Length: 452
Image (tube, rainbow, N blue to C red):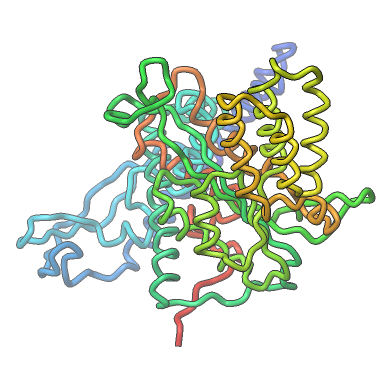
């Protein structure tokens, strides 16, 4: 290896000398030479490290597939793609006569279970979770000088997401079966914990939307709903009394699953984050019934708040139904919003009734008024403002854009559920500081412990 390093240094020096005669390209030429040199040195280091450790792995007496006895079959070579370039490694090979499978016992211990090294697989996943696969492959090539096809990067990225989802699902299942318990998170209990929920559509291939009714002109659905959950905490207000979200406190959930499984995932994160210790728990949503049904079942003690801006939008929609019979519709909007600010939904209904609308229009407004009266206890905005609480769901609407839209709703994109789920898993876990589930690393997350 010393000889290899010396050869690379000699090439690097030669490139430096040659670059001196290329005005404007000196640094660029030297950088390229340095990158090639470091790559070849890295390859040699990996090959030597594998050669040193491969024989430390003892023989495996039984087959991992069928548990039958295995026999040694010499040594086999394998090419592994790494951040330093392709590396050829040799390791002992075993064969199972019973199920006729073959395997290298050292691969698991060395982290060589695939033909892509862990570091390069991480680079593929980091690029692919945030960029279209073609752009991600171009970025890897430009930054690391590693040529990879978009399809290969996509497969590697999805595999990382599938493994991470399996680990996250295992945590959820473990919490439900009471096989494990969580250690209380370090630090003080959160003062106020928020759970926000919303949904957004992801564009799907036709096979994923067959027999589904949608809002498109042809009556068919072209998207499938992704349910989004967001948890965060609040401990302070700004100088004007407005609430401030605690930095780094976001946890995200994104799933195509039904409301029940979505509730399980949210509950798991609620427990992991220690929200059960919060002085005040608040659930905010846009008024969809499935959100409140879920909140009533999972957190009956929580204060429920209808997003104020959705409620105000309903006021404008209500007035737009009847503005053609009103002399001053703007005044009616102001009056209704004033009632809404105080959470006085009966006064809103009385204001509309006092207009003595034609029965045809009254039937339309009755449905709108029902929305407000049904959510009276969730619309006490004057009280929420006094407490210094958030009253809008803008944070989860932003999550719909950053988690789903920015990656999955670009021009021409069409997905399958199985194809998009791993990508959304990577995006939510990474933005929730739960990378330990993606890379199998301990990043000081709250550990699961065996219950007594």
